[in-house]
Amino acid sequence: MTTVARLVLAGVLIVAGWSKMGAPALSIQAVKAYELLPEAVAEIVGYVLPILEIVIGLLLVIGLLTRMAAIATAVLMLAFVIGIASAWARGLNIDCGCFGGGGALPPGQKANYLPEILRDVGFLALAAWVAVKPPGRFALDTALGLAPAADGDQSPYRDDSDADDDPEADEERNREKDD
Image 1 (cartoon, helix red, strand yellow):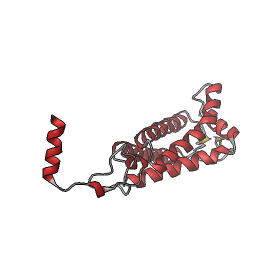
Image 2 (spheres, one colour):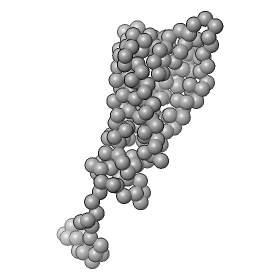
Image 3 (cartoon, helix red, strand yellow):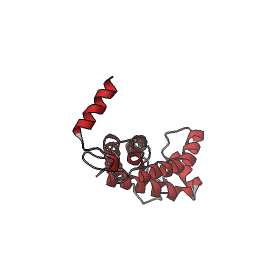
Image 4 (tube, helix red, strand yellow):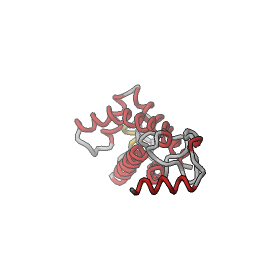
């Protein structure tokens, strides 16, 4: 389950970041449309956000620094939920800019913020799951011994050929460690 959650989040982040990379001006416009940040800060966020989304997405795909990537994803999703809810509460009629585009909607087109908020809350829940659970069998964290695989789950990268099934030998090694 955690591997699936990681890959779903990674896919969303990579697609969202990639869709903004080719048009940084639109990304900046989308951030400015929320009217939450000073202009200079909004411009920096507009440039940095797509790169950040792609980097976090790639970390989740390979399962490296998984817990930190999941926490960063959760923080991003929380910021997105707050931003969208704020725009809705203040009566702004904007495109969220989540997957490119962004800015004021054309006259006659009405923003529908509830599905966007619910979607991002769902992604926030997935990120929380990934942050608290082991990263899964196919995570680089597991292969490098940085995190355990799921309970009872053997890493496909682990070599158990050196495992000693002799309980007496294990007991002897433990006594030697205590000395």
